[in-house]
Length: 158
Image (cartoon, rainbow, N blue to C red; front, top):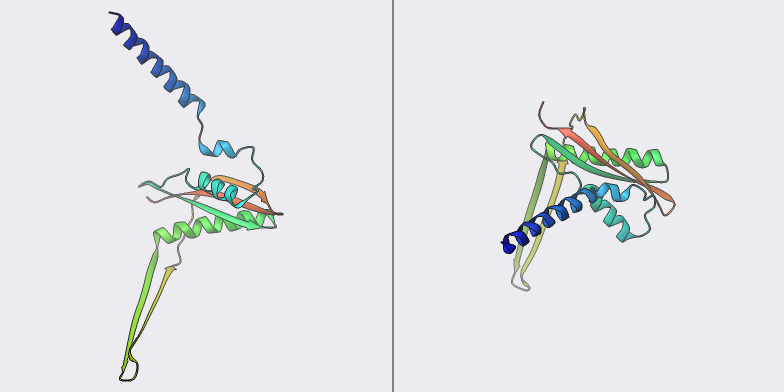
């Protein structure tokens, strides 16, 4: 009987510990609530990762992270929104073009001379992106300029 009692107590303890852990934890964006400056490249990368990995696209919605950097706060935010919209347009309507060329020249004096060229580009075609929702926006002071991050939510279904 004591073995059952210990197991029951252990289970209750694990359940309480789990509840305490989940109730004390918060999303990554809450960690940035009081943050107002970015002090280093590592700080920038960590912040970018926290913000941009918070939302994951689903079958119904695309989430896109955008960043902008400017000495003007409004311009920084506008650049971030444009960057996020371009990322959405790239997923909805883009074409990758690749062109490869290999030239082989043979002479009796030098033998084979090979040259290889590869060009690739990603073209984003005009895409109407209305009805997106700004779900997150945060700006930071970094080296005398503003760095803004945004997360846009775009409905895939009509």
